[in-house]
Image 1: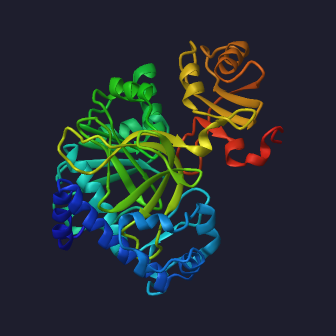
Image 2: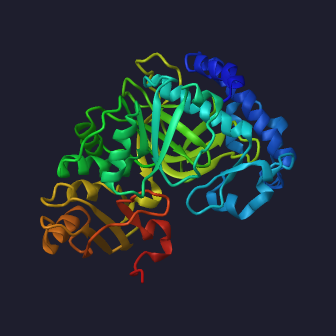
Length: 428
């Protein structure tokens, strides 16, 4: 972060308390800029707008955004550089990569604004600019020369890999003793289990930041018990950055609505407030690659409640998870992954596991082999009790369960949700 960004940070800090009318004015002005840029500089969006019979001059209110088509991740990937704005030198951009894509380019301005959004949310949770933050993520290049601010003891960040085993990660955290610790939700759970089950020394940061995966209540309690403090959860995506952050009052997730527009949709139509739907995002700060009505594949519930903290940023009430992680039952009905994982976690002797749905009638449960691990029949009955007695359940005991290349450990993988053509047949 550069000192020159301080005015913008102060502006963002003020905006979280603005009236809703003022926030709408800010969003409309930013939306007009993004839509105009996309029309003038991106062949991909120009074609989509024209096909919808839309011209930027028709954007009079925020409601007019609904006239534009929804863009899927597949659409965006297929468009390639045609989705980018022609006035940006892509060679000077960095790429925010998500699974299954080559990534969305970010200008220095785009990237800086992401940092400011993060700092606003962190500050709300008690983070101070002089606090040390340790980030356990995928391996990254070593930083040999720290920015001036970090050399002055401001915004100090320390990076370590999530691919190290639990004892090595915990030793590294304890050596630095950071005030804030930030990692995947699944990695926090793995570390918490190691602390509680193996007696490894527990770090005591004042701020635990979970992200990138859904934080269920059982995992939240486990992390709090191991580390001695309740984690704060942040929701975002690689393409957009942080979208919403858990309020210190724990009344929901404040949406960064002065930086992006969040819609909740089902079958192409907005759902009623309080009803679950799929999130569609319009990023108001993406100069290199506009993301306008971009479908993330995540499900959530929007709220119209006013938060007790006094902030006027609207709330996400419930984050339900990724559509690709849902179990798909015969007939196409979707079931939350936590309907299965919550039951398996209660099975005596179960430590670490992963459930893979191979078809709409078959799952495989990978179980970490330990002396206390439950037997095959116990696991099968638990899964069939959550899904259906008709499900075929294969139990596979493994010495260790590997992470994904991203560094995450996905407890549930649905091959059916990812590819609906696999309904009704076993995946080879």
